[in-house]
Image (spheres, one colour):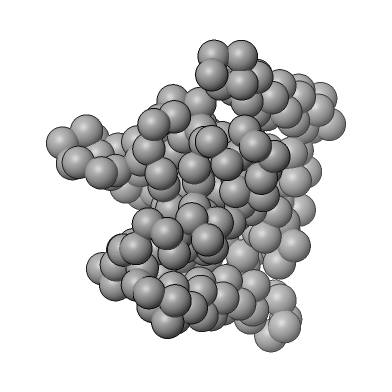
Length: 227
């Protein structure tokens, strides 16, 4: 049975995960120095998701919220989740594929939040973290004959499900962003593939890639036309 963890030392060093954690921590320090991570003006200045500014042309706000956090608890919870999920995901998908999954999941989550939570402001890496869970679910669906991958996929699917149910009973949680990130992670993971485990069919990659592009475009147009 092929083991994606049995690679060279360089391959097994999740330096992209380390970099993401460090950048996120540095951004939080910047938030604190500029006036506090719970200061809305600071969050807006550094790139929180806020629909009026996105509609004014600041499209980069679909990605920057993934590096901002509101309060130390928010930072620690997402930082720990990113560290552990990222280490496993990066070893299976490889460095650049993992980075693509992380960033596209963040964008997908923020686009969903843009479409379905237009009156709120949001920030946090949870959109991307849910995307990593979605990526594992994709692996479990495609490589179900690999018991290790299947077990990981089941664990992360359960974790995502529990978190989403808990979100229903918590205030201030970006549920559309979490769902969008999860679905985005599943779709983009299908596009980039996981060569260390095996090949994905080209037709699957093209179809799900098109679904991702049209879904994101459709959600953006939905909000733009409804403003």
